[in-house]
Length: 252
Image (cartoon, rainbow, N blue to C red; front, side, top):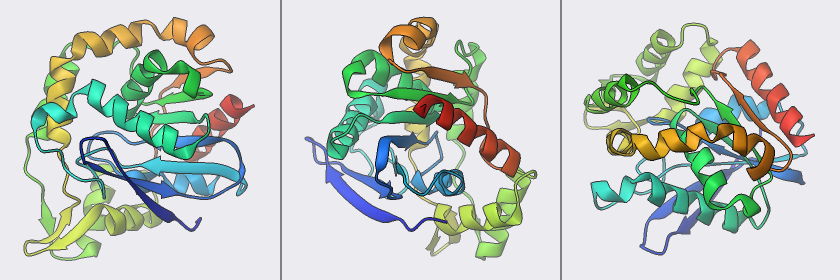
């Protein structure tokens, strides 16, 4: 597993954004964008399969991980999150390949439409180019569920095992270590305002779907080298290896 350095930057409206830097000095860098309920450290095992010299970073979206919570629900609108990702891209000072998972893939598409000249490519994981109408409502319902707490890290890891039974115990323990915080109630999922993002996924479904519908344009024109759309879940060793192969294809 690579060592991680933590960077923090502040947006124009005062939000703190956390960036986990996995090091490496060869580019273009990979900028990983997690999905709802995720955080920057869910990518640790994927990054561990990349060549050590490959530059890799991951960000926490607002309301997730170590990034601060926004003062209002409207701050989680997709266009504002795209601005946050752009701030991280400009912080890197390079043209990265975006690697998005789930909602992170949708955001990567919107970034490609918003500032293609700052990007070298994108990998879109575990998302449909045209998500069904029922998906935003389903995700919004999931987002309304209160966070659960557990008496120990081991019990939190057991919960991760129920969610992703195909993943290894090492992955379960790692996700429990970095995805939960000790509170008065026990080990609780890292504070997240994913439900606000999912509310905007429901409200902005037309914008999101429009960006997805332009996927064929993104492939050939917006991202110069290649945009790969593939359904990849992160968790099992085989799936992580598949993800790495896609990254290598995009990076040439």
